[in-house]
Amino acid sequence: MKSLIFIALFTLIGAYASLPQINVSCIEDNGMDGNGIPHEWLHKPDGSPSALKALAILLADRREGHSELALNISWAINIDQSNRYLTGTWINVGEKSFRCRYSPPIIEVNVSGHEQLWFHFTDTPAQPGKVYEIHAFNLPTPPIGSDATSKSERFTTPDCSNERMKALEACLRDPEWKPNISSVFSNGQVEVSFGSKKSYTKYGLELWRCPQECMETGTVVSEKTCFTDGESRGTTTFNISTWPCDSLYVVITPLFPKCNMCIEKIAQVDCSAKRKEMERPTAKPLRWPLLLGLSCIMMLLVSAMALMWYAASRAHSGFGKISQSPPPVSVLVVYPAESRAFQRAVGAFAEFLQSQWRCSVAIDVWQRGRVAEQGPMRWLATQVERADRVLVVCTPRTEPRDSTDGQCHLPGLKDHAVPATTEDVFSLALNVVGGQAQNPAALRKYCAVHLGGRVDRTCLPAALRPCESFSMMKDVDELGRHLHSAPGWEASCFPPVVLKPGAVNSNANGRLREAIRELEKWQNPESCSRGGAATRITLEAQL
Image 1 (tube, rainbow, N blue to C red):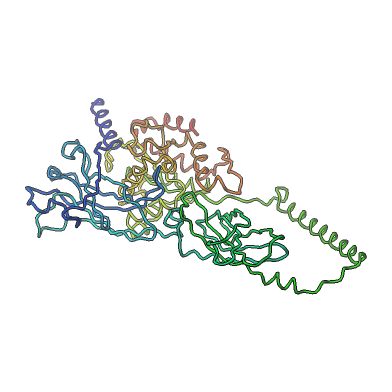
Image 2 (cartoon, rainbow, N blue to C red):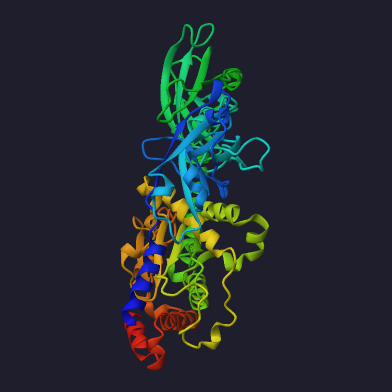
């Protein structure tokens, strides 16, 4: 009997942890006469597959070797007997059409235990501030007059003001950029000031002498490079004391790696200050006693300002007990729909992150109103965009999801119900991680977390195996350091957070330990008869 139970549990874990190995390849195909209609519409099919289950559009991270962003187009296929007619999926993206084929065909693969399978491709570049109309349907389509089988989505990409989009070449080449150049000649110098763009941080400045139309017959007098570092205006100075001011022009060019035909802005130097200086009568020289008195007053003022600065710096130093804290790390927590015990442990884990490690935690159970209002797909896309880290909480599924037979009697679990949308959010999150499989830099944003004992990496879903993995509470210090090394913290002006096990908040820590202990009892019912002693000893040794 025990052998049969072991075999059943092993089968459930394998079905949960691995997905059928089916590859999809999408090739551009504009169909009949280039009008985006597949050739299958010319023939009446013997049968047709069921309609697409779902369609989702996200903005994918930049791929290696490519400067542009891409659209992550994902769709779900129903698993039923109609798959024997499925020859592919047709996707229209604006004026382009793609034919997606499955290898091997779904009907030839063992898909038992799955109600649907998700696929995706990221071969469509994303342009800033553009609205994309995406339509998708399975091939061959049913005869004309049948129920609609296509799915449609509208997706709008952010404009050039977005942090991810502003580095695109389309945003860098901005013909509408108006730098409002100010260049004034005074005291043998040309002082230049100009408005900068956030997407341009490096500028080349040239001072030209042009007898007539500049850039046709002119000479470069001086050259400089100016870095704005995010400032709204850039400034620099040219020394030209040996040159007259007439016919001087300033040429400003933004510099970036792909600058082949860079945008140039030209402005003539203002010589009015120089003319006034030449017309001003020569002042009589001051006597030396007056100069000496002025020098003494200036020295006293400088000394007083230095003392005030020193006193203020001591008041704000480490001796003044004024401390600064770094901004919180934004963390998204996703997890599969499991038992009530697992739901309670995930909630305790999220509370631990927020109360102890200064994390701003987003989790579906805390934002049920927004999930219901936006839908799982849009809510997940928004949270992934905002998060510094995405934690995928995993646990081996040892019993059917709704089963309670043979489990421990734990009265504290009655208030911990599993939200209905949890499994949809989890499946979509795995699909997003899978879309980053070819980008190791983007995968560093995601990691797997196990509650309880360490789980074999082969038991993880295939999309999570390249990601880093942590076990609570055994790897608590490593997980803390991983969270606080998120992008944006390396360049922080604040000192790094020192994570000490003894400084953990007692209430949050106690609730998390108790929740993990109950989870292990739930997963190992035999430990209930022994009072959970072995489980308690193992967990306390990890802590």
